[in-house]
Length: 468
Image 1 (cartoon, rainbow, N blue to C red):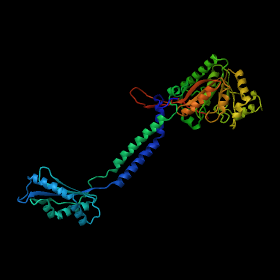
Image 2 (cartoon, helix red, strand yellow):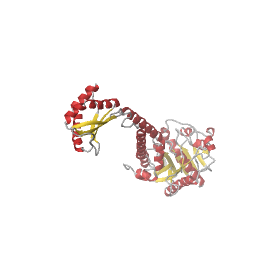
Image 3 (cartoon, helix red, strand yellow):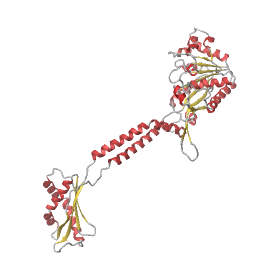
Image 4 (tube, helix red, strand yellow):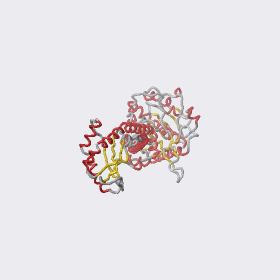
């Protein structure tokens, strides 16, 4: 098993599917980010109001307004600013306005290319800003004495109470922007989780991540193609004998069948094939039954043993009434013979299967009756296909894997975790039978419609071969 991110295991279909499934998370994160940001901006917003007055700075000896003596005005403004920032002025303002805490900003500036001085006061209250200017104006004579005896301050523009704050409140735009950013971050996180999830998403990952042989790939195909079929759910299983199945699915099954035949020809009487999976709903029962049907179409006599006695599926997939089947558990308990439990299906195969779920089946798998059953079936038929329970749920398959000749593991795309798949592969490799490899099932890909379009069509090419 390779550690880290395998770029060849990144699948666009799986990534897109995870993002679609997690879209509600993106919406929630976006909405919460917007609401929280809006509430924070509203609660933390402090409006600032500015009042100002403009004075003409002239020498005392001058008559009228003089706008050209910028040097005198500049020197006066420097001293005036220092005085406004001094404790004397601040204490005077606090005292006159009866303030416990003085939270104001006072500034003085020279209007460019003139000798006009602008005094401004900014606070969170427009009234206080206006009153602070009034305090400065009331102490104008005293300030003039401190500054210089040569300067005269004549008011050109009186202060006013600010009607609007200097800083505008725009929580809607900012909160929406933050919400969108939160949504984008959640998309990135979802995508990262999808990429880092240790499942098998591509064909290349089977051999690279699992270091095993890819026996074949079965592509996705909708089980019910028409609205009527979806309503009545008439199709219970996807079988190659069904007229609705595409050639792509049939070819995939036939390729697996050819490989099994090749192994049988290479070996001596290697005709017992075990089909299993890691978890439920990976499609092992459908794969096993379709392999048997493909072999039967080639004129081979095939016996299918449904060894998943906890959750039998074969009789459901073939729509066989329970009343017509003798439960194989009776054979294993010695209550009847092989001929009594053998069901001759009209599709060219014989089946030995349970019709209800049984608990504590491991002892039956280990018993000599199961071993004798497989031996007899191998002699009676050209091929014996054994459908077993999921390996991660029960240990029944471990008891059977030494009784067969060939084994294969069905892996559904982006379903079981890599470590669990590897555990099952190791069990099959350590058994007496030959492990043929893994079959990648329910494989979906994104298809580019043409060279000038980008993923404008989602092609569901893989067949839903899930267990019932």
